[in-house]
View 1 (cartoon, rainbow, N blue to C red):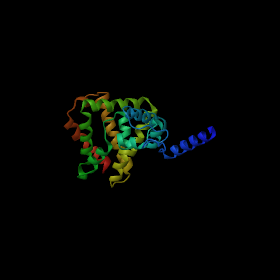
View 2: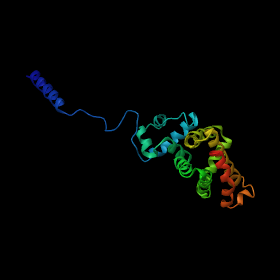
View 3: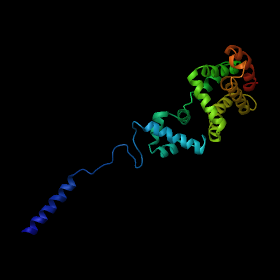
View 4: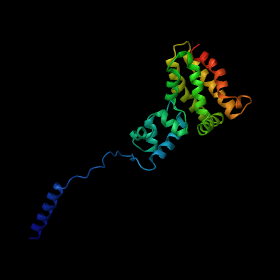
Length: 219
């Protein structure tokens, strides 16, 4: 009798187990990955700074940053869009390279130099944006990792696209010369405050700089 009851109980338990739904993993979860949360954006920025510093701009991938932050790579695109936008966010840098490139290359080719210098002044005459640019340049001047990052970023995202859009001999060299002219302007006017450059009216400087940048970029 007891043996019969035990057999019946075992059979009933087995039947119940068959009818219970199997446990499933949470939707959208992958092993080793965390979903987005309150701290996810900051975690991504911390991981991005470390990866960019270790590998340089060109050799850092969005997937590598996602692995370091232990998140799904789709979250990087959700929060930041593209690699260059994530790099800018990681540096707290106010310049959007796509906007710069479009502003410079679109329109009358005879005013390429003027458009570039006006874009630079439009950014740098804003105190908050200027301070962030200067902070990055100070870091690049004293830290080789930061200098390497900035060089790679400018070459790939700024000078490269401008050069590709210009039908001129040695376009890469021309674009980089123009960029160094802008960096020199930033250092002299806003960082070192060399007079009379530091206090000269913007329109006066535009008139002086635009022909030089035009010659660099177009010839």
